Length: 247
Ligand code: ADP
Ligand code: ADP
Image (cartoon, rainbow, N blue to C red; front, top):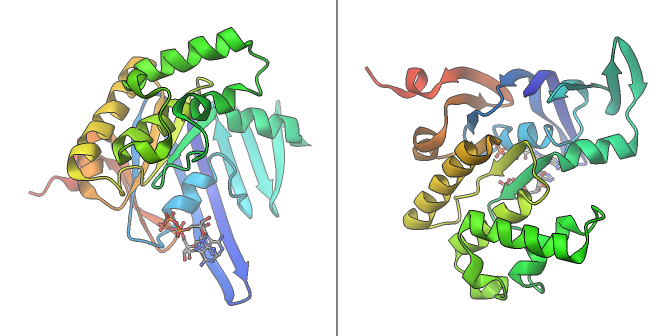
């Protein structure tokens, strides 16, 4: 479902250069819940942001559900039947819309209510008002938040805000959901309920989930396989049970 090959990402700032990813390769299967763990600054966010091209690698290849993108000098090329062409903005947007993402601080629209937050990504898909309405209620049911449809983000708990963010991320039926420290701002109860929800969605919808975290508990509770990152490299990779079971 997701294959990352020899991806390198260097940030160049006034203060100097940071090699955030150093020749990273990994493969995530369809329907998996895959964890990426490591200390702050290890490169987890950068790696996962290369999956939906929020970051453009300097070099490497990223394949999403059969679509292979090669990156050369931060330029994106589509490779199809052995032919390499520059990736159009339209194709890039299509690829991006097949991937949902949730964040530590939810990134909701504070001036919009729950309905409008979830409807937001549906507005650019040519759906009718009725279709948008029905889809929003379907999503609210999926995340168990029908009663809050008219609430504003400031009226919700952290766990409820993350449910709204999850509903929004799933609005266009993505095959992949990326989660960047989605439970790091939540108390233990809310964390458990969000992790259970992600597990449920993975089972019910078959969505492939990539979870970034610095917490072992998150990996152990929902991930099938895990990559351990250190200083821009994947230093260990495999089944959670094999990597974290202490003899
Ligand atoms: P993690 O998610 O594991 O905390 P990140 O991927 O956020 O790690 O960061 C990896 C390294 O890249 C860090 O040294 C970070 O400071 C640097 N970095 C991340 N984003 C940027 C950026 N936009 N500009 C400059 N450096 C960045
Ligand atoms: P988080 O740890 O929640 O992912 P960060 O504080 O690491 O958030 O990063 C927030 C934003 O700042 C990201 O867009 C990241 O790319 C950017 N960033 C991170 N480190 C640096 C850095 N050293 N210089 C510039 N931008 C950075």
